Structures are given as structure tokens and as C-alpha cells.
Amino acid sequence: MRKKQGFTLLELTIVLAILAVLAAILIPTFLAAIDRARLRADIQSARIIQNAMELYHAETGRVLSGDIPAILGTLANAGYLDPRNSNTQTAGALWVLQNNRVMLDVSRNNADAVRRAYNNLTEDDKQFVIGGS
Image 1: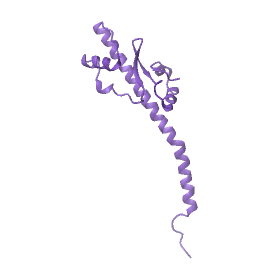
Image 2: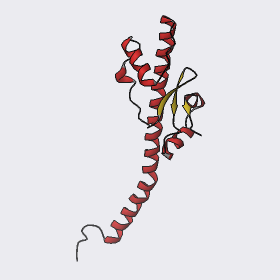
Image 3: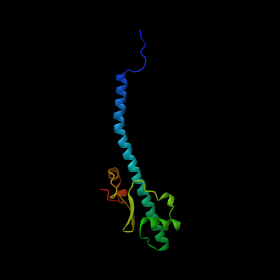
Image 4: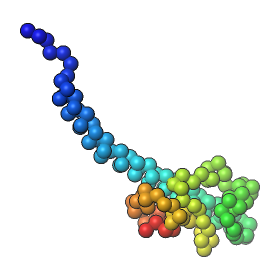
């Protein structure tokens, strides 16, 4: 009598097929979660910048205008903002100033992943995004 050692080729093929199906299901889910997290991080940074602008206005009486890098520099130099925590934009979208409000413009982003991530945002977060729908 022979002792059975190891797995047969059929058993290994079945296991590999099951793993392939699981990977096909889980990888897009994980990638979508990463895109959502990046977009939400950018929205939170926009909120931080907006709050710093409002605090700057309340304390100095001056309204900041211009492009976002100049505003970030002004806020950082005045001590209202730590540039290390707000300069990063992870979703590939751009911050813009619209009606004295910091917004995240995703209309220039060609990635469908960012637009799909927009659909999963809360209504409160969507107020900080332009061009998501």
C-alpha cells in the first residue's frame, strides 16, 4: 500500500481558482476604499484651510483672496496653519477658492475612481467638492 502524500493537481487547481475569484472580488473593493479615503483626506484638509481662513479674517479683518498656494503661505506665515498638515493633496484633485470658500475641484481629474468615490460621500462632504457628479 502506498501512502498518499501531498495534494493532487486537481485539488491545487481548485484552490487556485477559489483564490482568484476572491482576489477578483476584493481587490476592486480595496482600491475603491483607498480612493474614498484619499478624497475624504483632501476634503478634511479643505475644511482645515477654510477654518484657518475664517479665523484669520475674524482676528485681522482681512479677507484672503488669490490662489490657494498663496493663501496657504499667508496662513502659515501668520501662524494659523501648519503647512506640513495641509499642503498634501492625495486624490489628484485641486483646491480652488470659490465664493471665498475652499473647494476641492475633481472635474479636472480624469480618474473615474475619484468620481465613484464622490458618489459615496456624505452630503456634508459633497459641499466641499466641485464637479463630482
